[in-house]
Image (cartoon, rainbow, N blue to C red; front, side, top):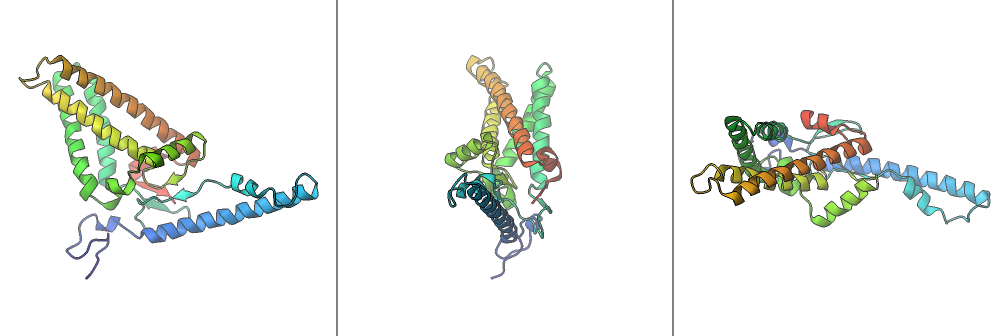
Length: 258
């Protein structure tokens, strides 16, 4: 039985098959980087230990944690990277065209609707665009390219918590695709945007026209989305600073350095 590029068994190739590439090659390259960093950290620890031992500050064997503390955080590919790489520093594709178009279209549509609240036509039209985008993204998260599927980047609460804790300590693990906190934010935003748009639609129907509860749900959920966006932007800026990479540009080009 043949396996076409992208991991599907049999059948004609699909347009996004070329996007799913050799993960093992990526992980091997990452492992080589981390192994090199580990050897450099061990060498630094050994030199520091010997120097301090000779100076009578500590006894040999008690500074084993020095190298560990000085080592940079490991780089994790998660399961998103799908492009063949040859050396560290190579730019690889981590986000598909659909993901990037969806992201920036959603930003434009949401803020157009939010800021155009005084114009019924603009507000409603942009709101329907938001709803359409979310409806497209949800099934795409199950049938799209592997890097776009929820199962490839959504993690459990404990992993998200550990990542946030490491982020606050200033030493977060690096992910080539969505990190655990970013993935959790994606899910939260999709859910809240559904609440906003569906409640907004209900406000236009005869049954719920003028319904105070539906109106409150629509207005307050819109504010919740704004708060989530604020945390999302803050997380992007922190990750960009700590990892010394521009995630905003990466969401435009779809590529990040290994």
